[in-house]
Amino acid sequence: MESLVNFYLIPGLVLGAIYAMSATGLSLIYGVMRFAHFAHGELLSFGAYAALIVVRGLGISPLAAIPVAIGATIPLAWAADRAFYARLRRSLPAVLLISSFATALMIRAVLYLAFGPTPMSYGVGIVPPLAWAGFRIQQRHAWIILGAATAALLLHLLLSRSRAGRAMRAMADDPDLARITGVNVDAVIRLTWAVAAALAATAGVFLGIDTELQPIMGFNVLLASFAAAILGGIGRPWGSALGGLILGLAEELSSYPLLDGAPLLSPAYKTGVAFAVLVLMLIVRPQGLFRGMG
Amino acid sequence: MEQAALYFATMLTLAGIYAALALGLNLQWGLTGLMNFGGLGFVAMGAYTAALLTAPASPMHLGGFGWPWWVAWPLAALAGAALALPIGAIALRLRADYLAIATIGIAEIVRLAVRNEDWLTGGPLGVPGIPRPFEALGLPWGQFAYLALVAAVVAGLFALAQATARSPFGRALRAVRDDEEAAKAVGKNPARLRLQAFVLGAACMGLGGAMLAAFFKFMGPDALDPVTTTFLVWVMLIAGGSGNNAGAVIGAIAVWAVWAATDWLAGQLPGELATRAAYVRLFLIGLALQVILLTRPQGLIGERIGAQR
Image (cartoon, rainbow over all chains, first blue to last red; front, top):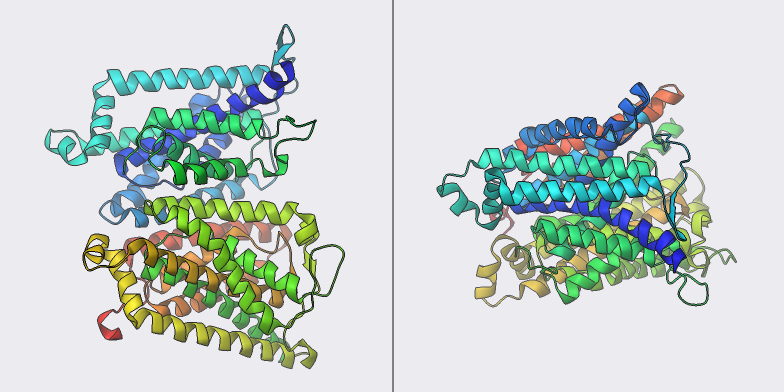
């Protein structure tokens, strides 16, 4: 029981929280702008490396560097929108998708140029885990779960209580209706990028804390993030968050030694779990757990 | 002089293989509007199928049947198609972007399987000793003969692709791409047409993989890289002109020429700078794609529907 919680459930929740934050941003972008943003993984990587610079430069903890990561990633998302996506807004969604793909290559190339392909870490060192009656949780894991919960609360307040958040939801429901009722479309788009980039940057720092930093780190979670967004119903932020949690847990639990010590699935194929869930979902319930947009 | 001719032949052979991949993608994206971001998966299926069928027997991987290439290559195309069939059947019923996501997934799974299933693929060691057609002729004529073979295959694919684009089937594909409802109204079955185009395109990619494996004489998990196997082909097609087969071929040759030339230039730089130059190149492919999308979305030569009749 303890080993199930310590080695599978908690890491699963941590990974799930990271997926959830990434998938929620994807879903918001999809809802407001109607395209699959393939450079989302690179926003994670960018945030993680932005934090690395201040962690190394000022010697602060990576958690304290999250505001810097967010502050660096939001302008990047705005710049990409301004330079490329905004000009293609009237094209087919496929063209925007390909453009976001090109953006991903560009951001990744810049990270490779600046930091090289070798994995790096925030260098926090070894911290004793928190223990309670046989259950243990790494402090970094506790912070990630807490941080993701805080982000979820803030997002909830923004979407349900603020005028800007309501405008965002209105755009997602019916863009034309939102426009004629006086919603400022450009402002909503800017806000959407800011929220999605902030979530991505935070998720990137968390991913860097949990594992290590590599320019490809964000792309590696992109597939799982899309799978989570589709699982939860694309365009539905809360569904995507739940989808992320489910996928993170499924990925970690897939290597649980249920049958006489042999893992259910060889850990080498762990990253394939997201894909398997995605395919299953596309067959059984393509609209997602909560009916997404058609 | 002979060195230069050999180098040129090598580059042209690779350009030809890329042309095959671009023709496959043109059938999927250009003609039918299907987003396949997992080219690598289908290329790898073809490459490994051809590798295992033609390589000499070895305890390190499955197969090694030593079959001739003209038996193995069509089977490689079939293998690419076989991978596309189930994934297309599932993802094509749905939104266009779901296919893009699903194909990234399938490429990822193929990469994982190739690396981890040692009994099948030799794992990280790969499949060595793949024979290349005509290599018995020695250098340089063996190299030239292989180039001629690749050129002949590409010419055949091009002729088929042209015939497809002009046929009623090709017109139906464009109809599904441009206005699905109208296509339905005149009795076309969009799901079926999409699946056919997707599978045929994947077969082209499988065949391209087979030619690539024979060209390298080796196939391993690191021999195929998503940047050069998937994304570069997209740049080629979009630069050349999606929807136009001649555009696909010209795009493949032109982009490959730029790619190879910058690779050669980067190779002249000292060690550390050479690795950095590779990243600058990655940035430039992204930028080139953006610039084409923004300024000339139809590519070098756009789709010419009227002229094709």
